[in-house]
Image (cartoon, rainbow, N blue to C red; front, side, top):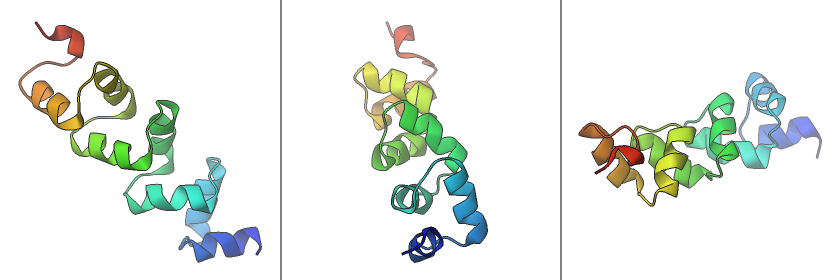
Length: 97
């Protein structure tokens, strides 16, 4: 199967596969991120901080981007806990009493 065929088989049109492949993705990696609503520019941040697509989607739904999600996760918080704490004014886990 050619490169183009692999991208088409994964559901990417020409402009989408060029965008994702231009950011270093192969179709098998890109499809789950795309299906979760991520743009390839955002995925780099999440992957650099060690999140998979499922984790990233949960943290994004709680209002976080990769870097801040990693800080809260490293401090032992779940997306729901961190989201609740930021909603009441704690911007960073070190702000907690």
